[in-house]
Image 1 (tube, rainbow, N blue to C red):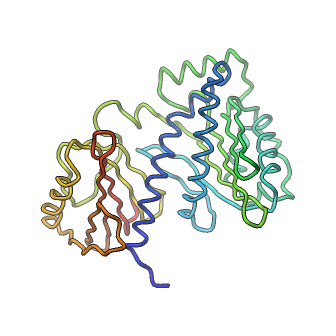
Image 2: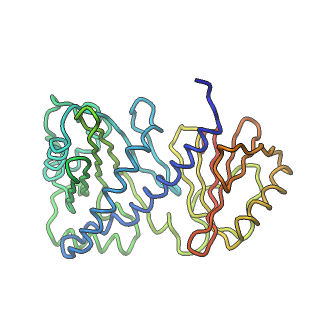
Length: 315
């Protein structure tokens, strides 16, 4: 099969939407700790966690041969790995729920070696302390999730409340704990596709998603930025030749496209003819072996501009 960069870029745009949802999830997931006192939050968290798992099972084709990789979101990073196992869904969730209840800290190494961790012969974890904020959800034996927070030590109810307070003050999710998230989906042969997401360092949500101004990240190199726009997201998998940036602006999609049609060629970006199978509401440019696709759509009264760059390893 001949590699088609345009087809790959359309696929990457779909992944951009999933990556954006991953970042939104982590902005919300800290509230899982509140399930200790608020049941309504628990129900909402379960629904969102299941939806994220569905997206992640499609996102993992960014990882070569299922190897773990870092997903960078507005300057912060999470680790992602995927694997398949002949074990049924319920058995997989049972295994990792037990690990979360008893040895959540050790799940980082298990996730980093996920293929071994989900094999039927894998021994149970015996390192680390119990996690908190445990949540498990399963839908009709077809898909499910498990999530908890590793504490790095024995914690009491008082410690959990203190950690939540620290997180609320600092905006750093790691002050509450390190995320241990696992999504599982039944495969056609009766086995299970497993995706793990975990953090090992700080995860500063207040820095990632500022109330005003640009989110941390970067703009497309050698391209004039759209005036009067706010950068919301810069996302890429480290080492992969993809970069996704999302902006919002009061300008209409037509004005956005008009701007890039005029300005991009001034910086050496060559417009590419659109084909019938290309997405609507999009522009395509090429420059020095890099492909760029620009999308613009109205979203809740503002125009969302997504810029998908392919062919260069982001920094």
